[in-house]
Image 1 (cartoon, rainbow, N blue to C red):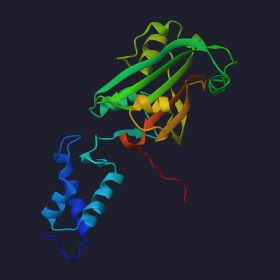
Image 2 (image 1 turned 90 degrees about the horizontal axis):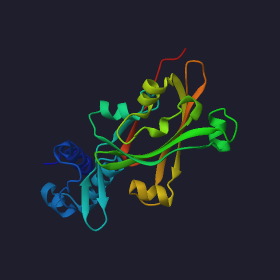
Image 3 (image 1 turned 180 degrees about the vertical axis):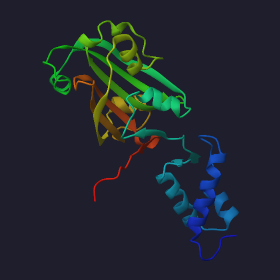
Length: 241
């Protein structure tokens, strides 16, 4: 029974929120008509409750088919470990899979050269990958490293190994700190194909340069993430006053 002092949509929303963890990913929840009958509420009330849960990323709707349980979101961090995305995902107990799109030595264009404080045309190692969480594509990443720091790295297989760990252990390129910038951009047709979303869907895009202990640039990176699969942790620290 819904208590009179509690809005009906709020009561239904919280009942469904409590039930969602018991359902598997991509499970189809009861239809709007079934929820109306089960909770003795109107279609408007059901729609309002579901819209809230969809907005929060807990559910998703497929036009003409129904409403389903969303995959769990990956925790990203605005204050991130230098261990990289590979270790972040593994520490959350999730399975990570990688599809390497580009793995080559090339000449730095003006954009990459500026980010790495290199002359335009200097050689860099370029690594572009699609990252999958539990077989769901969530991110396209591009990394660029001055080739003089990692000569021979193009022979490595980054389908199943950590890029940062390889830089550290095999090439002694040690990342100490960095700065990331975050913005939203619409995805291109090619990006939509790889991420299995519609073109122009907003992506969470981070760009940044990572440095060693001597403030020498080691890597420039760009990550384009599906907003519906990423939740960001922001650390707040005490300031003066």
